Image (cartoon, rainbow, N blue to C red; front, side, top):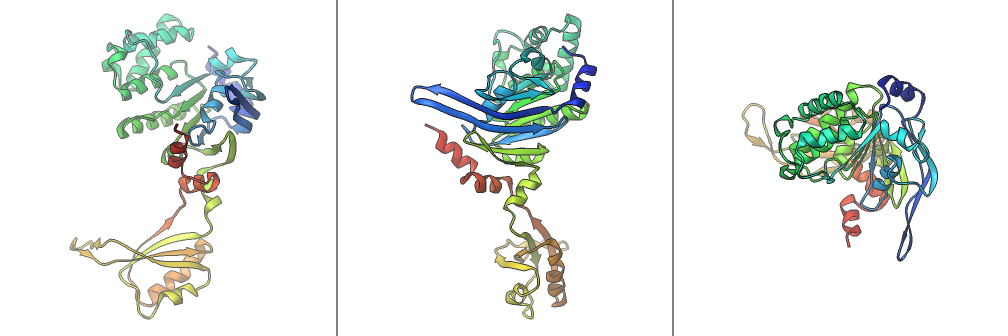
Length: 353
């Protein structure tokens, strides 16, 4: 394996991932199938980059190419300056991969034996390998099942084992292909926590994550690319992507009642107000008695955030008692629907035979 100092020197001098014009065509009985076409991508060292898309969009194919498991039909790609097609062995020394739902392993081996075997595959001296095995067992909370056979593990335990295996060689580039698929809420939360800790431990470590889960991508990712039919449709930070579909600044205003002296029509005429609508709101408990009391909820679309001041001044001046004001942000799901033309759940349903 390359030493940490070699990793650090490489990380400072190159993009973590650079892909130019990546394409991949598979030959099928019915004719050629294009999985990727003209993909350009640059990920900086230390980023957690997400790729969102439905089944069949090309996410897994992209990861397989970048992780040296599949050659591109066209284009070039490099990991920390190392070409994935011509410097395969050097790339593999500084990367690892975890695929959700991939519970490969030798069922007759114990958890500890499985990790020790991979430590040997990674070329570690025996003592160093076992030290790392013990460290990963502790880090992922599976030291107590180290002597349990893999065939007896639960889904969550197997995925933790996958992560422990992927961290053994101290990778600088980690590919995560749907890492939380099939996990319960608690196990998925643990996985996300470990991903964050993995990057925080050593600046420069880079993660490429594919996922179906919009909330997961929003929580974890520095930047995101949305992919469909083998093409990148858009990429940017979660906030930048959301601004693509945000036509107005939307605020939710909760108040006791709308003063008769300030009807909705008069609010609509205020400067910067683009839309205003009365939304149904559940009764809210009062702070003093805990007894539910009626509440009015307004959805107010504004040209910009600064226009809110005029609305609040008008309501307060008419004697309205404001309970809460929140800004409503677009979701990544809304971005996806606008770009792809359907929700991700609908896309997955369509892809099933």
